[in-house]
Image (tube, rainbow, N blue to C red; front, top):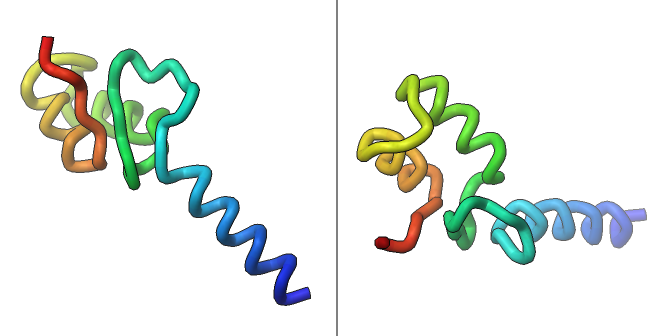
Length: 68
């Protein structure tokens, strides 16, 4: 029983750690918070979905966007 619980816990932790194979609009995150939650929280906090404040909020959650 402990092995099953440990395997489930590890799987859940690893699933939220990286953006592999998902379309995140160019954002990348390794060890970051889940993308959808980070975007939602930053949009609510900054009242926008782009710009320097939004990008700083996303960076605080482990997400970066490649420079254009």
